[in-house]
Amino acid sequence: MLKILNIIGARPQIIKAAAISRAIKNHFSDKIEDVIVHTGQHYDENMSEVFFTEMGIPKPKYNLNVGSASHGVQTAEMIKGIESIIFSEKPNVVLVYGDTNSTLAAAVAAAKLHIPVAHVEAGLRSFNKSMPEEINRITCDHASTLLFSPTETGISNLEREGFKINAKMPYNIDNPGVFHCGDVMYDNSLYFSAISATKSNVIEKYKLEKNNFVLATIHRDNNTDNPVRLKQIFEAIIKINKDYSIPFFIPLHPRTSNILKKNIGDDLYNLITINKNIIIAPPVSFFDMIQLESNAKLVFTDSGGVQKEAYFFKKPCIILRSETEWVEIVKNGNAIICDADFNKIMEAWKLFYSKPDLEYLQIFGDGKAAEFICNKLVETFI
Ligand code: UD1
Ligand code: UDP
Image 1 (cartoon, helix red, strand yellow):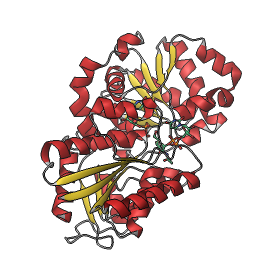
Image 2: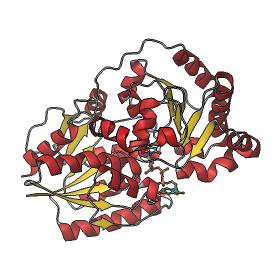
Image 3: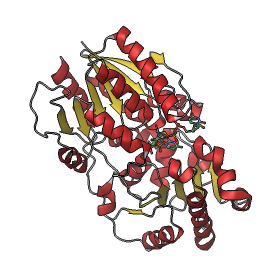
């Protein structure tokens, strides 16, 4: 039996872990023991618990309850907690997702104890080291023994950093295995798409009209913490809402709601809050999110995951960042990088509003990335 320590902490990791836990339950229950560790990086009910209930993720065996803190304090608490669990559980491999502080902490704790790390979402790069996530993902990739990249671009990025793409077994930290496997988030979107349509009433609850609203999410620190950027994003939202009479639905990350009024100023804040067609809501569940994404006219986001899900559901996307790791969707014309620039957002909106012919190629795998990953874990470590 292969024992994996499955490390989650932030919302998108809980969602990604659902695909792995499902694959283990359905196909690998006699081969893999899944020990889930929640760092507690995200802790509000609608940022954590809701996903376990809705997506059928097994309850974590451990919750470190680290909560929110500065990068150093948060990451240090996680390393301390994960190290102690590694001592007691003696896992064969530590599985990590994405690029958050929980990912970094687990990779550092495991690699220093000579426990192999398997990284889901390896190879993604923004080439912007002012992003905490870029530091986390580079460090994690270079401490990993198995690297699972969702895209071809991820594989090229790793090759450029010196990884051997065709390394042979036995894999270890000095001879890591690199695999192109598709995206576990695509697995989830396919799997939960039909179920969410029967379980979610978010469209009715907020009286949204199908194909006639914009879904927006904003949580990236360089947007939330920079008043000039945050203001431009909301000024563009107000302008489009007014000129095109199209409602916006904005399920807001707590980081953003905590700072919105202060950073956009009272005037803009009041304009938004009195406008019934700009709906600011608390974070929604994954089923609600699928319904929102699949029924929106267009998506505005600075989220990595939401950019991809917009693509999965064939919706054009305005990316509120200066670059993206998901370069394929931009190259294909399905998404436009607008930064937090009012004029760029308006130009991209006009282009997408004119209904260009967009093709959504199948570039995120076949919906079986999680099975591929479990297979490789078994092949490598049993
Ligand atoms: C983290 C990740 C980011 C990821 C995002 C997903 C890092 C460095 N960043 O950013 O890559 O895109 O998660 O959502 O790991 N808060 C709450 N309740 C919660 C969680 C957070 O109120 O349940 C508030 C706190 O005020 C906290 C702030 O949000 O200080 C930021 O949370 P944190 O986990 O530090 O970073 P995120 O911005 O969520
Ligand atoms: N998501 C959700 N509810 C929300 C906003 C996002 O379920 O209110 C989901 C979304 O569908 C995607 C994931 O959270 O699967 C993306 O996480 P987030 O935007 O927090 O982080 P990122 O992907 O940028 O790291």
